[in-house]
Length: 161
Ligand code: HEM
Image (tube, rainbow, N blue to C red; front, top):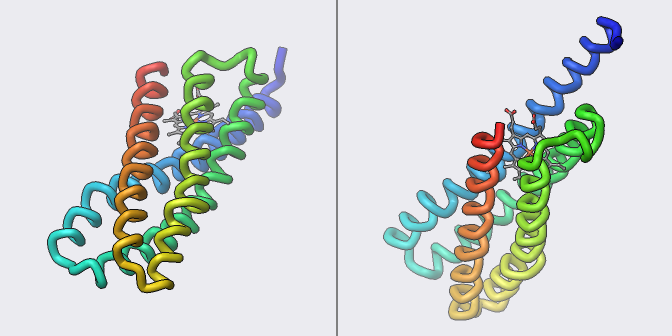
């Protein structure tokens, strides 16, 4: 029998961990939705490459700094939740699926920061707009991939629950 104070303590830890978890993926997935579906198409229509490419580079630079924070909180809160549920053996299959998808998303994010975005910044520093445009086209697909995986994760978890 678990006594009441211990139960209340676990309940409040669950509430904190879940809140951090939800805030983290809302910032990450919501930010990608905005960048891919609102900012990028309108910037393409309204701005010339010499304005659009630096804008996207700086916006993504700022956004990825926030995603680092969200990513760290997402993993900490996720592991914390698993520990509160009593370990991997006690969680539902959708949590295993969530961890797998989040691992892929994390690897894709690392490629974005250390591969495509770095290439975009380097090309702009060299004033090579042609190469910068190629990197931005890559970034578009990278963000589309992670956005799709993020939305899929939310659907799987919500349906799984
Ligand atoms: C972008 C990646 C992720 C997304 C979109 C996501 C999404 C979600 C959602 C929508 C919930 C349900 C929240 C609620 O109950 O209201 C949840 C809960 C949870 N997540 Fe994640 N998550 C992600 C990554 C992770 C990672 C990396 C871990 C583990 C290290 C993890 C572990 C958990 C656990 C244990 C729960 C509680 C499940 C339950 O209450 O049955 N998640 N997540």
